[in-house]
Image 1 (cartoon, rainbow, N blue to C red):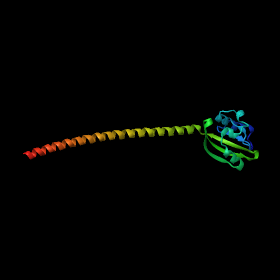
Image 2 (image 1 turned 180 degrees about the vertical axis):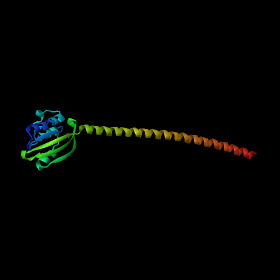
Image 3 (image 1 turned 90 degrees about the vertical axis):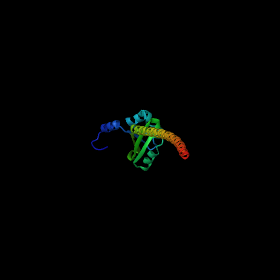
Image 4 (image 1 turned 180 degrees about the horizontal axis):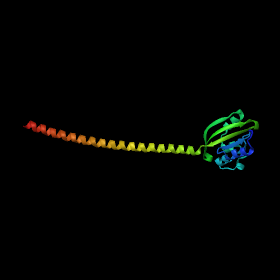
Length: 171
């Protein structure tokens, strides 16, 4: 423990960190969780401690890799549908303790906002396509009507011309 840092301070940091913190042993059994992790999964520490992390989070290959290779891993964002959670994780070994820790940053709100923006953009594009299609349909109808009117005018003018030519020839 760093010099001058009390157990009480470490406990406060652990309890009030907004990120989910979970510590597992070499067998991937959960040994410690902080309140934020419990809140993310909507479970109590009693429900989580001593459970296999894989049964709680699903695929934990990255946790196993960090543990076995003794390296820090910054993992891509990931969805946990069972918990309605979207999180970024940092996993690191605690070598002298034979444990591995995982910090989970809850990005659910941002992810939902991003999905909502994508949904709104998609709907807007669909509406724009509908308007363009309606305008094209109307333009085609107008063009058709103009074409018919032009053809009728031409026929009438040709008849008038023929009558005038016939009248001119008779004179």
